[in-house]
Image (cartoon, rainbow, N blue to C red):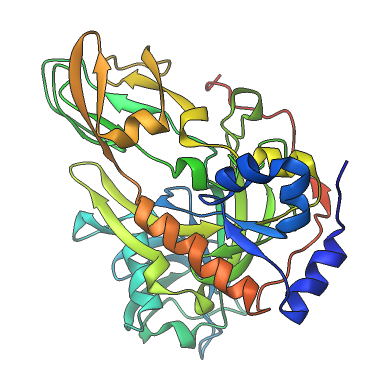
Length: 372
């Protein structure tokens, strides 16, 4: 079996001789060269996804005020941030809505405002003690004014995601967008052929400590994501990165109509061609990746599946549901997923992005049980 080492591939990246292709280009190369030939000819395959990743947030350290304060409650542009960590550490969640603007503005919008250089208004209320006497403070801060702004996202980069439709007689407003009554439309998410975990479903390379592209910065996988369910092809990642290094092109706030705020993120992972197993997994096509179309008109946790459908069918724009031709629309951006994979490819080719050995593998058995 044809194999290469990670150190050999990193050396080629350093000296500029590495051959890098995107995950969209890889299937045709494997068809042409075979898996052994692909391992010989290709060093790195870059992946990418860009979509709503609600389970995201950022740890912020404000620095100590004078007199000092132990923050019990804090608001950033009137969006509440959790203060029960330490005196001036906060955690801001992407989906937290504003106190005064409701669901039209939330934590994700604060993050985007910070990344694009805007000043945000901070209001803090203290829990007084002898060492933290201050009760209240107000100030204005930019991203550069925080000591640290560390993004830590519990669940990102779903391997694949259920599509959604609505059989009820009323319009529904969901995290899968606005679903029209009577199976009037289908919404789906995910990058299909470009999705990082679809290109390494067995975690041959991706693991704890893997260096990733996170919203324009270099970040890391820190573990399996919440609701990680690899047995059913719904693996997720827990990731981290420095908000101060992120790029607004790959970090965008959004509001789902009558549902609430979310954060759109660009995530990419370069996959080294270490062996033929990875060559085979990175040869995946949209036609190989299937998801159930779930009926959100049935309002229970275990929504029934109308049918299984491939990303190739979804991307065609029309699918058949019970003899009815139904239009399909993506909630994620395939164009931006391509841009993530292309940007990552250029960084690897320039020697700016080296690949890292995982400290330990991701969990092969996950847990996605209903609430007890």
